[in-house]
Image 1 (tube, helix red, strand yellow):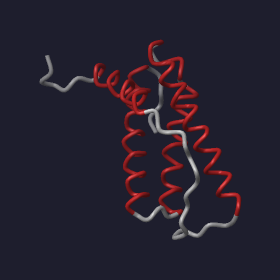
Image 2: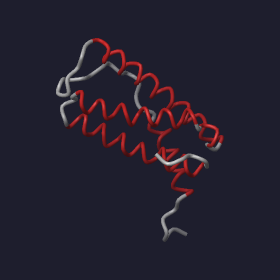
Image 3: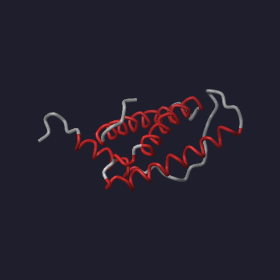
Length: 126
C-alpha cells in the first residue's frame, strides 16, 4: 500500500480498497460462501477499516460521518467474522456464513467515491 500523506492519497487508497473488497465479496458469493473467499474479504475490509480509522483526519469534515459509519460497519463485521472463526478450525472449502443484519452503508461509500472523483477527474472532464 502506498504511503498516505494527503487527502488525495487517502481517497485514492480507500476507493481502490472498496473496489477490491467488492470484487472479493462477489467472489465469496459466487464461490459458495467458502472460508477461502471470506478470508480474502476480511483482508480487504480490514485494510479499509485501518485506513478510515488511522487517517480519518485527512478527510474533509463533510466525510467524517461517512467514515464513522463505515468504521462502525467494518468493526461490527470483523467482530462477527472473528467470533465465527473462533468457533472451530475452518478449512478453505468450508462454508463460512454469519448472521449480519447490519447492511453496508452504501451511501457513505458513494460519498467517498464521489469526493475521490472530484479530486481526480477524467482527463477529458471540464
